[in-house]
Image 1 (cartoon, rainbow, N blue to C red):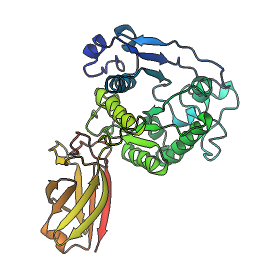
Image 2: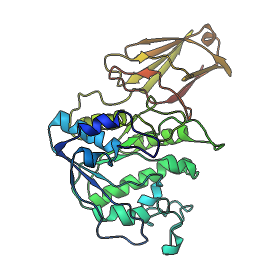
Image 3: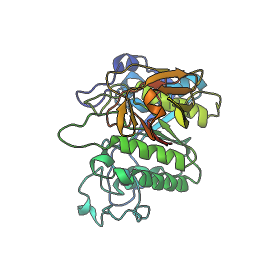
Length: 352
């Protein structure tokens, strides 16, 4: 809850002070990077209290707090995490055979990075937990895979990881993913966060029991460690209530484009999960890009119930119209449903 050094979590102090709850138990797996699988981890179960919550994962705590509060059930949270870790560090050599660029260590001396070398976190932090009864997994990772140029393979590596973890636990573990927060390019290094988000949605579409949290409204333009951890954890909890605990009537999903159409001077975009109606919020940067035959257009935007309608006289003569929403590394969400959940990014192309 204290946040990364010099990058605090929003409202952490007050939430830590109010955190005492014997029905929430916390376990943090000590960071362990090894060449061979271990039989045990270092850590202990602790009741939620100011002394224990202050050093615990903020996202995980807010997730568990809401599940406990709404469902009135005891909640145990296990955090097995290492900041800046690579997806393949949580996988075995066998699972990585399909990825020839993954440099599998052949000895301890091959471990050049304790949290990025393939297999080492699986061996030290995940292997000892196999078989432990648990409801599911919340997954908040991906920045490092972009930094190392693995963005194009992120969907395939995550699908391999999820399917392999499910085989280990011998059940279809729910996986709740957090899509990457918006971030400006910095220090002269190009980012591919928009690509990673797209890959994360590809994983959601490809595998049952995988659901994503959109946090396009919770980003920090210049800070990878976002301050707004509470909405991240609580949105994960909403998905868990719906898809893990069976509250299927709950509006827990972000709006997602499901169909498009054009007629004369209008383009219609219809969305799933709009609730009682979508709404459009003004932003300081441009979330929507529209092209008609290659030229930029600034259409009028009309939002009604589950549909966004774009109006422009130019549309009636255009052979091709392209619409792109929030497909940038840094963007600010403009479209929300009635639960205040931001819409997933999308792009469409309509030809006459």
